[in-house]
Length: 383
Image (cartoon, rainbow, N blue to C red; front, side, top):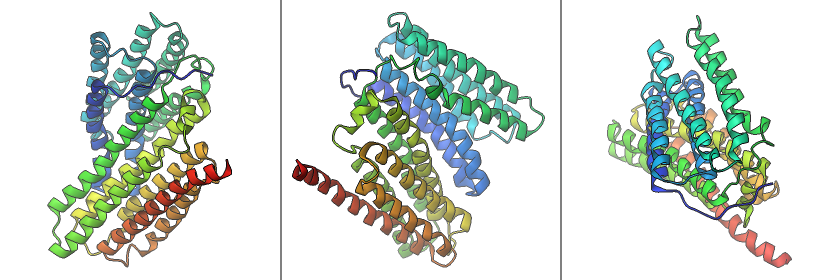
């Protein structure tokens, strides 16, 4: 077990780095928004994972070691340049060899900076040496697989190799848990950083809403109803994430001392944030279109993303607050209701579908507020 270190906040430099990831996330979401289909969602999800994982690596590294001095900033800035390259080329992956080479080069460059930064930190803190060995070894192995996939004769082989490499990278926290257990963590800082990345993804949904309204070709009344419903949907997602993010009192402090809960928290955010991203991409298509009904594929993206957010959020909360927590079951019930709207996508007008979805989330958010208020009172009564 590790001891929690003193509470600290995200630095201005970390927020600048987040801006670079905003560009990368935006390009991935745009791939879905151009043509919401099952294939585009799967392809974009496959590219979202390395972008998300790169952000996690930099966030966890900063959580463990972040002197915020000139040397650290310069080293990290090189990594951000590599992330910017990922943003430039991610939109073209699958459409040309050059884009794939650029994306992989950016990704491996960003990971290489992480290895170097751990080596830099290990000079003064021996606890980073096991992390350096494990991360350096895995990065070398998986990096070779990424490069090996570039000249593959078929796309299926290339993407298969990249998937194997990505699975290997995501498995490192589990495979090397004992080696990296000596490094300390700041629970509040980690929670704040994941909240900030969630804001980035919600921001893509807001951009989809406002951009769609600017480009839409419907009448004023219909546009107004759709726009209000879409904005309410975005606001409810924000409300539910941040209203419930505290779980039980002191619950997230266990992130600093429990590797299992830390992994649940970190990896639970992947489907949660991807769900928001898919919904945001679909919102732009729904609001900006001029069709009377939403296509089945677009409705699946809109509703499926919300369901993924709700279910993943329920799972993370259950890990900290217990499976009997009221909010867990409120979200599961909401996911079921939202799923039930999909068959009606071809019948309900656009304003009806997005309005009904927003109404479900408004009720869900209100129910969560009530449940959150009752919990402290119930705990006090038992004491």
